[in-house]
Structure formats: structure tokens, C-alpha cells
Image (cartoon, rainbow, N blue to C red; front, top):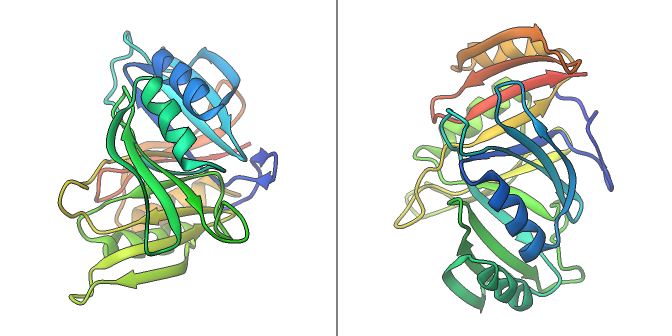
Length: 255
């Protein structure tokens, strides 16, 4: 098995970590603290010269990096956030500077849900599940949510490259993916085919694997393009990077 569960979180392990690389990195860190009660775990200067920070929201760790002096390409994305009170969290997010896309409303799939954009361009689906727990079984507090054009091809890439497994796939009458949950190691990635205002947002991911070199080769065979060959990093990890056909960046690492 190529994917490892070596990244600890409060609830166990986290294989897949979203990396939000944005210009307004300091402001985004402040936003997630104010809006979502995030705990800052780390803030330093990364190997590329930009800000690197790690925050915890509930049981999920996110990486935030970039900054105004950073010369890279921003990668804001969509994130599914489960909280105990979607209405209260939505109000806090708006008060902290988020732009409302949709006020809280009860959805037919059992969530009370709102949508906001933060100041860095990330889209947050703020939800409370109306079941036995406020988080649906199998998910964490925060789950990345992609809207690719050609979801089935991306799912196949994830299977070939990382041994991903389908947890759930719901389809429209034309067979396009309406909603999917895909497990990678001990983490989950959600997606739905791009439609209307919900378009592709190429995203950066950090994935811990048992064998970086083997995972890197599998990702290339699956159709990925090399961005960075496997190499030992100054902070003690062996790392490689691959770009998939949807412009998502996958950093593969082992300690």
C-alpha cells in the first residue's frame, strides 16, 4: 500500500492535507481563527521563501502558505466544514470578512448548510449534519471538495496513483458525478462535476506515503506530470511533486 497514515491529528492520523497557498496568507490565518476557532500550530518561513503555517480546525489540520512576497501561483479551493451550529458559524464568518454566497438552508441530503467565500478566494461549505452527530460518518471537520471537469477521470487517477477507494458516488441522469466521497489512506476527498457557478479550483495537496519514489512513479504512470523528483528536504522529509491532468498539485512525502 503506497499511502501511509503517518501524520498525527487529534483523532488519529491524516494522510491527505490541503495546502492553501494564497497571497493573503496572514489574513487567512486570522480569518480561520476568528470564524472557525482554528488553533495555530506553526508559523515559519518555508523552503521556497514564503510563509508556511499549520492550523487545526476541529480534528483536521490544514496548511496555509504564501504571502505577499511569495512568487508562486495561489491555490484557493473549496472546503466542506462541519460544525455544531452552521448558522452561528456562518454569522461569525461574515463578521470576519467572508462574502456570503448562500445563507443557511436545510438541504435534502440531511445537512443545514451555508456557503461563503473568504478573503483569499476559498469557498467554504459550512454545514451541520442533522443526524446522530453533526459530522457524517466517515468525514472529518474539514474535507476538501473539488469541482473538476471530468470527475471520473480524476477518480481513476486517484485510484491508480494512490490506491484510492470509492466510498460513495451519486450520479446525475446523464451519468456525470453529482457527489463523490473518495478515501485516500485515512483521509477523504469529496468532489462533484463542475456546474454553474461551481467551477474547477486546482488545489495543492500534501500526501504522506510509505515510499515516495514508488508513489511518484505510480502517479506518473497514472498520467501525472513531474514537478519535482524525489529528494531529501532540509526539514527531514523525502518529497516529490506531481501535477495531475486537472492542474492539482500532489506533494508526496515520507518522514
